[in-house]
Amino acid sequence: MDDLDTLVRDRFGFPGFRPGQHEIVAHMAAGGDALVVMPTGAGKSLCYQVPALARGGTAIVVSPLIALMKDQVDGLHELGIKATFLNSSLSAAEYRVRSAALQNGEYELAYVAPERFTPAFLDFLKRVDVRLLAIDEAHCLSQWGHDFRPDYLRLGHVRQAMGLPPTIALTATATPEVQKDIVATLRIEKGRTFIRGFDRENLVLEVLEVGAQVEKDALLADLVTPGPALVYCATRKNVERATDALRKAGVRTGMYHAGLAQDDRSRVQDDFMDGKLPVVVATNAFGMGIDKRDIRAIVHYDMPGTVEAYYQEIGRAGRDGRMSRAVLLHHGIDRRIHEFFIDGAHPPAEWVHKMWAWLLSRGDNPVFAKVEDMAAALPPEGADRAASACLSVLIREGRARRIAPNDRSAWLKIEKRPLAPIPGNAGAVWKLVDDRQLEPGDSLDFHVDRWAADASLTREQLTASLARLEERGLLRYRPADRVGGVELFDLGAPLKLDETAMRARRAKAYAKLDKMEGYTGPSCRRRYVVAYFGEVPPFEACGTCDACRMGDALEHEVIRPITPDEATVVLKILSCVARM
Image (cartoon, rainbow, N blue to C red; front, top):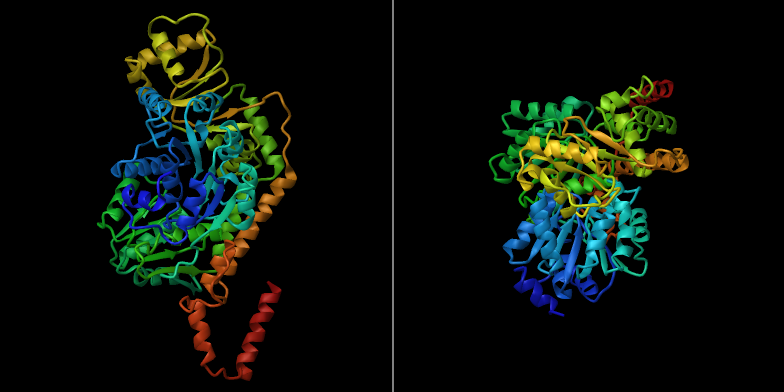
């Protein structure tokens, strides 16, 4: 086994480990299992990358985001480390080349999307010398986490099927409850849990109470100047409002939310990263994977719905170690926004049954329809958001899978294998199926133009060949369409929902909102955050947040008694509140 200090210096170019890293790396290099809870930007990646090289063989890294995989692999290539990724962005030919190289032991790390772990892929991994399994964004495993993803639930089974390799689960945001869920799902109870670095000494945490939205608009320009700065909003409407306020104040500002064209979003992100744009106003769609180290301020125009989301977003400031601000503009209406989101995300069981019945009534599988069409299955008060939430419940129950809308992405499902070789163009297309190691029952979305190029066919020839394969009963095929779809499972089985668990998830979402609102109270904000994530705060009061500074000021201030006139005003206000 290579000396760890030598590895981190010679292969990664660092003079040494950051505080807390060496113990984790040594534990994993020795073959242990671990859960690592460490803030974004604190060096989580090194905690599995160094052990991967130290142990030899190949490390499989599970990551949910294609863009992050590419960034990680590109970064490793610059260091001369042999790494690759396997996800839906690859052509069949490229996937085949990388799979062969992986089997031959040519990669030290391989990044894999969670949905890639089909039975066929697990069989393939038996021929790979896997010596470490790393699971990034591990909070996605837990139904109590703030970003639950059903594909992650299979990873406990995946780990078993891989022969229980040393496993490290990593996350930036996991409460003690979520930590227990991760450990239980992956069956790493005998491993160690490392909680590191939640106290960011260079972040000045502040909450500014405002009486109206217009006050937020008036404060923004001073808070983001000189920048770089990010302003987070809960809704697209508020993104547009805050952007307008900053531009009117003469601040050069970019706008980013999921409703904008991809080219516009990419341009804003690139300009911000390159220093051409000092301020970006965005929903939480912006920032994942962003590593701009000189962000001086994170401003929340609206209160987030969870402490996890808030901490993840403010963690993007001050990564260069310099002092930076994290300011939350707090107004009572902020809570109502998130109550609306929570209610929409947790529909009643009756609505889920109505959605299931509607999907079955279409007489096709998968069902291709717009979300607004699906919403028609719900009562009049149902909306697109409720329809999406009903689908999420069905996905969590293992009864459905989303198919993303894409005019270049088609869908197919393998029904059976041919008894004899297939001639002509159809044979060339079936070879792509073989290259993907697809078995009867497997389904996938695929890029039509890319498959056509891989088979040396035109788009029209590919489409005709797929139709012929469907006629022979070898597969089911859905052409490319801008309308998304839903693939259904176990159509003949009754839909049984765990309504107790559904109510518990809704109650938990409200409890998380309560905790976020608790952050805006009078206690030390840094201590509140550190304790929330299960780390023992090293202080009673940080002395730098606005709550601590206010407390210090009050200790030296003489408080005068309230006057009779003031008392009368207070009583009148309380009387009005009581009658509301």
